[in-house]
Image (cartoon, rainbow, N blue to C red; front, side, top):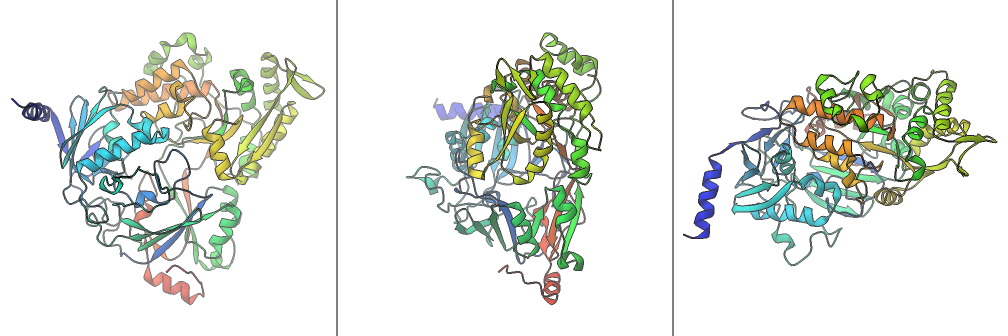
Length: 602
């Protein structure tokens, strides 16, 4: 009996123990039983016109998985994936290159059956060999940002030209089929005889809805709609990607970028600055309605933005010091005087979602955390985690007094207006990449000075900042940890001991905590939604009580400004903006011309 026949029997028996569908939800059923198109698109939107978008900084590679350098914006337009995430469901995907998704009932593997119509831009077929090549290229990239997501894959097997199977190291990571579905697929034949990514600015062969038309390294990249795109009538693509041309232009300074937008240099801007949103959008085009401002409510977890302590530094290794400095940040004053009361204080790593911890631990959460009782502060079980509330009038005296008491407990003493311990003055550097964040940092610096602490503020250009970030070469940064409604093994990349010394990871604080590691494993192995919520709340609570970050703030709305030449569907998805469902309105363009607006878009 041949080994191939034996393999065939094994696969046949395995198939009998699996179930298959065109869509996959991590917990429960998918919304669209027979997807025609998503609710948040207009299936009749015209394919017309062009759009210019902006990016900050620069880029030096067209390789989306490069471990070094900065990838160009928009590369998600250039490559297709096995499946596509629904923006109005928290954790569902629908097949694209994968026509069917076959999952093992016990979650030991996933099999993707490919759509035989799938093509790259040169018309060549997308086969299982391309999927295998793409997966191995990701692993070989040694980019921790992407490789860690696939750590639980044991091996990949090409069953036949249109079928590929991923075997898992264990059956605990329920999210892994979804993660694999999001993998971009690269053409194997294009890279035969060369190393993937060796020429970072060479225009590669793609397969997505857009092709790369031109590249001006570090300055701009332009994509054109691929007229023969194989999936233009596919249910997950109908009503989307409606611009004939998409250009990203790069700016070094955000204030310059804002003025360029108001002058008509580009079309669309998602605003991150409260000050800009309140005061920056002025001029005749705002008054005439030629530029529009809209806010879109969303249901996404806030994630965590804040001043992250680098606990690899001795000065921040003591949790009491980290706790004390939390009292020195006066959010209430900043929100009123800097942000025009637009923000909500972040009180959880998963704020604005059911995953956020609250109150004291509930029964199931208490049972989980009790296993680690000797390694956790008693207060965690006795009272809810709370951030100090300052008075809006700018008086931070009460908070600073509390900070001073905690610092004294930690052995720091004030001598001639400066804080010392063991002969060392308390001084450190806050590293920034955005000048806009300086106005948040300066009041914090003044409060720290009252405590005898010298915080130097240093703002770097994007390239320098990223290099130092990758090497953990900082005392404190303003970091951002994004979160989804379906946390999984990316939590290792954010918080686990294994990532603390892994160059390029997002474990900004250098967390090495046995309890955190154990809770991450429980999240990854959660058998149902209820367990996932309980484990995530427990992790959130442990992170908060260790004071790895001074939490900032978040906005419950997307703030969007755009030139009034677009239309968008009436329905906005719960978990996104649905931007690629927008389209250019020809009549609105004519109106802008009548208003003497000069936009060069073709």
